[in-house]
Amino acid sequence: MTSKWRRLLALLMVFGLLSAACGSDSDSSSGSSSDSSSSSSSDEAEEETHEEFKIGLVTDTGKVDDKSFNQSAWEGAQAGTAAIPGATANYIETEESKDYANNIQLFLDDGVNVIVTVGFGLGEATIEAAKANPDVMFIGVDQFQGEAIPNLAGLMFPEAKAGFMAGALAGMLTETNIVGAVLGTDLVPPVVLFKEGWENGARYTNSEVQTISTYHPGGLDVAFGDPEWGATTARQALDQGADIIFGAGGATGNGALIEVAGEAGALCVGVDSDQWGTVPEAHPCLVTSAMKMIDEGVETLIGQAKAGSMEGGNFFGSVGLAPFHDFDGIVTDAMRDTLAEVMAGLEDGSIDPNPAAE
Image (cartoon, rainbow, N blue to C red; front, side, top):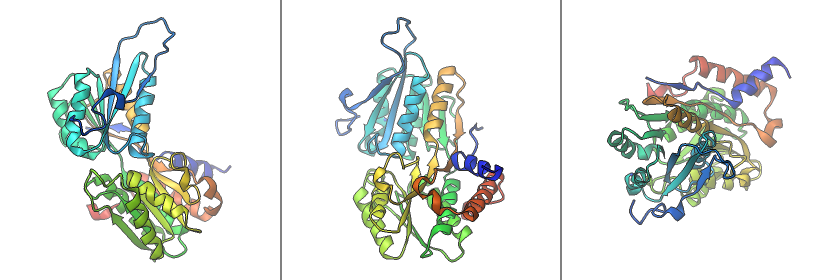
C-alpha cells in the first residue's frame, strides 16, 4: 500500500480534532424502571468493592436502538461505563419532547453522577438541570453552549465537513448528475449542516450536479422516527432521477436507505455511524456513511467526568467517512485522490464546507 493510500485511509476513518473549548409523566416510555436497560463494568464474582458511580442517558425522541444517533451515544455511554470499575449505566427513552425535563429529573432523583442527554432538543432542559444541580456532571450531545457552565459539556461536531466529504464522493459517483437527501427537521442545526455540506461537496466535484433535498415537515417528536415518510420521500427523489441518496434523520433516514436498496443501480449514504453495521437492509446500496464519532466523544467525556477533569463549555468531536465495504471497487484511484485533496483542504481550512453560513 502506497503512502498516499495510507494517508487516505487514515483520513477516511478519522477526520477532525478532539479538543475542549473555551427533564417524567406516564406518557414517557421511561416512566418505570422496567423500560430502562443497564450495563455494569464490574464482575459480580470480583470480591473487591468499588465506589458506586452511576451514569444515566436520556435519549432524544425515538428508541435507544435507532441504529443511528441515540444508539451511538448509548454505545459510548456503555464503553465509558466499562472503563470505570463498579460503574453502572441506564437509559431512559423519550417518547415526547414534553418529557425531556421529567426524564432528566428521574435520574437526578436516583442520584446519578453523570447525565448524558442526546440531541439538540434537550438543550434547554439540560442547561436548567445543570444549573440547579452543580454536583452532577452533564454531557449534552449536539448542544452548543453559548455560556460555559462548569458541570456541562456540549459535545459538538463539524457536520458540514462530514456532509461535504460524502457529497464530494456522490458528485463523482452519480451517473444521472442528480443526488438527493432525505432529512430530519431543519429545526435541528446539525441536520441543516449535514445537508449544506452534502450539497456543497457534490457541487465541488461536479459542477453539473442537481440536488433534491427534503426536510421532514414535522416537529422534533416525529421528524426522526418516521421511516415510512423517509421511504416515500426517497422514492420521489428516485423517480425524479436521483441515483444517490443521503439519509440523515435517524429512523426516518433509515427508511430512505432501505427504499433505495430496492432500486437497482442506486446508491445510498448513511449518517452518524457506519450504518453498514446497523442497517444491513441497506447493504445493496450503502457506499459509505457520513460519520460523527458520537460514541468516542461520549466515552471520553464520561472518563473526564469521573477523573474530575471535564470542563464546561464545548467539546469538539471527530467526523469522517465510513469504509466503502462492498463498493470499494467502484471508487477509482482518481476519486480517491480527489477525496484525499478534499479532506486535506477541509482540515487545513482551505475548503469551506458551508460558505453560505458566513
